[in-house]
Length: 203
Image (cartoon, rainbow, N blue to C red; front, side, top):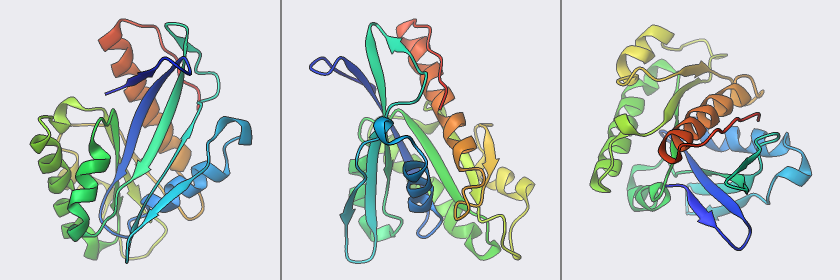
């Protein structure tokens, strides 16, 4: 849930990038961080495990405006993809306002995508929340590779709730900002509905 930081006069909104191991979550955040104006972004931090890591940073979406005379700050997080770090996934999901589910388009990763999506639903449900009620988008990453699932197949397997989707090649940045814009638009729209606010986002 969006948190209000009265000390800094900010509304803090949390978006988590979720998906199987090596699907491109970290690459997405690295590209976003590198291409934001230095004055608008915080330092990227990394919590490393033995084989995976969680990274996060915050930023001020350009031209976002103010909510109740407060600045809106976005926090972007990734979760570790390895199954045995599920406790960390649950912790990172606490208080989440929106999800970007990053699917690996490679054909051999289809089952891993489905398993990770189900794991996301389960972890949210254990926290008393439903993915159907949470703003989220799907990113189909690695579209530049040769052996990939078709968009329609990925939508059929993963897009249970009819949310926006975006194709991407995170290593080049293709589709990365488009995905973020979709997520921010949904999250801020949800914020506006819940608090009866007029919020506009330009990332």
